[in-house]
Length: 266
Image (cartoon, rainbow, N blue to C red; front, side):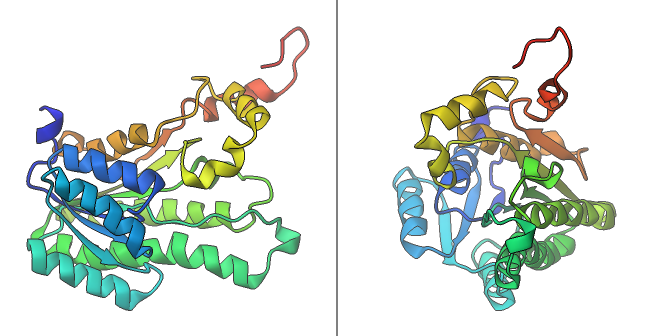
């Protein structure tokens, strides 16, 4: 199966499609033959991505959507059904980040991250999942982070919100597997995206990050998008409830950070 045939004629919903990993994934999915419903809160960036895809002859629709608002998600699901008649795949990519230690974490900041990263993921799984349940088929891919399984310092809300999204996605795979629906998790490591610009501007920080990754480089977001496309496709038909690290081997380096006599530092 060639890349243009991987998702041929499949309708895929992608949240957070206006920039970064979402934008890169939109292009990967379109190149794989998918027809797209792109969701994002920022209309200008959303339309910019959709315009590029449409000019290349891709089938794409858009909708401004705040996934933390149930009425927005309900309307987006209805628009997808009206336009395409089905939903073959959902990519829960939209997310927010925050760096605040627990002792300084306000309830407002906690709720901001939970409402998007966890509640928003739940709402999308619930309402797009209902379409999949009716058609008895579908694939859900939820984007989390290495921080979902390894606590990240000064991220008292971010890591828990992504950990919650992980078990939620696995819950969907367990409950709906018998109905022909698969639900998996992709946990990216370091990527070159707008969200990582604070690190990109510091060459020393970039160099230190690279040294802690087994592959010794930071990912292009298209590399994560290609794994997402695979999980949405029929090639992954027996993968359900999996958590796939796409981190260049970052998690495998943890014990190497522990000093040992006679062993050089990384």
